Length: 463
Image 1: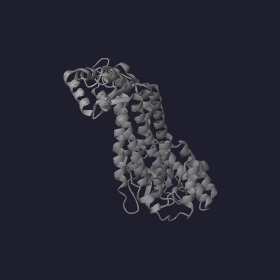
Image 2 (image 1 turned 180 degrees about the vertical axis):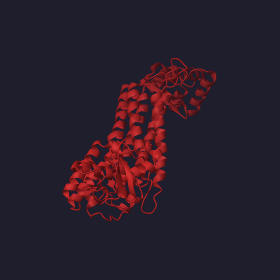
Image 3 (image 1 turned 90 degrees about the vertical axis):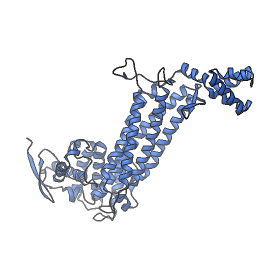
Image 4 (image 1 turned 60 degrees about the vertical axis):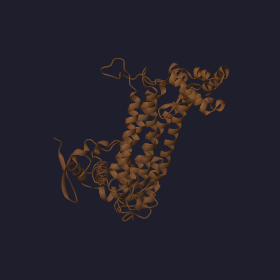
């Protein structure tokens, strides 16, 4: 068995595994929330953000001369290891804990303090020469640290993962649209045949949706650039030097390369998380666009013989354990499921954001968990759909032509020449008698053969 050591907090002594850097409060959280830690542990983005906050706070405190330079250097060195991922196994806590994220903040304080003690050649758990509360958490509260972590993690994942993945898919679809220039197909509204449309135009609609969705995410980022750090417990800044929030935010901006700034109103930054709600809503809107694209693609590819069958998708794997030769649009289905999950996550974030009470919102961890899951899930789904489906989409030209030639809505092109009523009569006759529009038009005598052919050639050939 691993030897244990005794650590203390304000409630007394706690036995901690001797080979771990965390302390009493982290251990208490593990004991009090055992069902959540295994399944919902914080991942790399949150741990990295914690390291960034603690390093930046130590450097700001040293600059303000409220923390000795030697202690600040030790904390910054240990925090850098947190940033770099060296100490990820020292962060065992789950999402579902206190709503302020206090245990996670203390986890970071304890790990960084004990690692700093190790570096200094001290004894783990001694709190000498670095104390988790008095030194690592100096000028801070969990109530302003955790919202700062929320914003850093969300911004880095959105800018570093989601937006590039969307841009990649967008580029692939745009390239496919250029490849399909000149391919005309049946348009569809109300799930019924409509006037012709170019395949390139169909795809351009998808590209525009992705552009708009990505732009919506970008518009949400400025709210996330505003950081709560410096607000301490309730927004007044108690126990923090007046310039601490400004200096810490500046250090965070330098560390991340992102334009982070102090939140102009710390009371709102702690008690409400409207920027997170807005960002989640933007991600959900993007998910809606991706769901539309996934559904369009799989409907166009349905069949292959008894459906629409106008698009051919890559064969990625067998689609049935019973039906030989069946291949399903699995990438479309996976993307659709990811989008639906994002819708659910957004409901959680929106409701949690509405639950601030007085000077604190105590739903912070679940908000962060859900928005990060949405960001990472959509990013992964976009990359997979891009690599395994979008780049291999091909038109079934024979099927497209067959559908186009039998479409009754080509009759719309006759409106300017013979009027709506006569054109409708041609369509009704063709549908009733099972003939072509051409046969019905000539039978009714509303238009000549050459003129009909010229009009239809112009419509079908238009890109």
